[in-house]
Length: 259
Length: 89
Image (cartoon, rainbow over the protein chains, first blue to last red):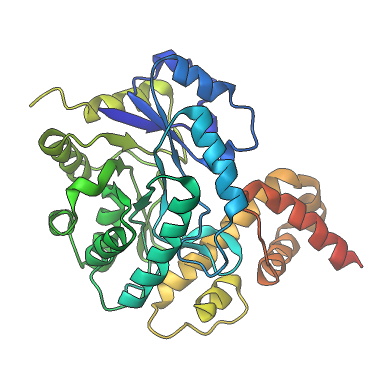
């Protein structure tokens, strides 16, 4: 099963021609917007899930319950119980509209875990947290252990982003895909993210640009997890979005029909 | 954490303890790009009249002084109008 992150660049595409089994959108882009395109997708009998960017789980400002009620309204409108956001900060007490690292410490497991519990109390359901890309961070816990500990503490689900694991391994050399996945409770995973990334020589770092085809290593791991554990795969392509035919080719590679 | 975000906002050039310089520079760059791309799209005439360099400096001041609250990235354009009015005043 392969899904696609639906972006506004795709608005002109005939939705029935997109060969995805499910879709994901950024709720912040739709809470205040006309939702006809999303209802068209639902009318084609394919679900639409929500993947947020502004929850600021790692930040210091109070969790915004008014925002969460709007979000709950969108979930109800789209008939989805799948809402995820990043195990990251999108600012401090304020928003900076990016994703910043949470120190990998036991103290942060409890602090951020308590914030996730608050979110789940307002939404009335479990949310999923995504392992983000990080470019520098502090703390004494291995990243996969931090992710697992937060998920267990908050009793939430995990949206496992295989591309982010690969980007972090290329940048920091700490934990490859196999090792990372071995340390995560697969039963908590909702689905998998795959995407492409680029090297930026100005910083000497691989950057999670979502602007490229998926690398073989990431795709192969996604297909393996899909076959062995029935985990759905979702393709993210947010920058330099190619034409429909190219997206369909990429989606075709993620449909695990060949054993 | 505030030392981290002070660097990202450009309030200080001191790398917070434990963090690496290339990664910190990248985070500052990503925040700049995020604001600049949205504001260029909404205020092309302001950018045109100021020129590349002055526009870039204006965005950097906007970020340095930022206390953005909204969950909606698009609301940055309203924050920028308030900021421009304050700058003019």
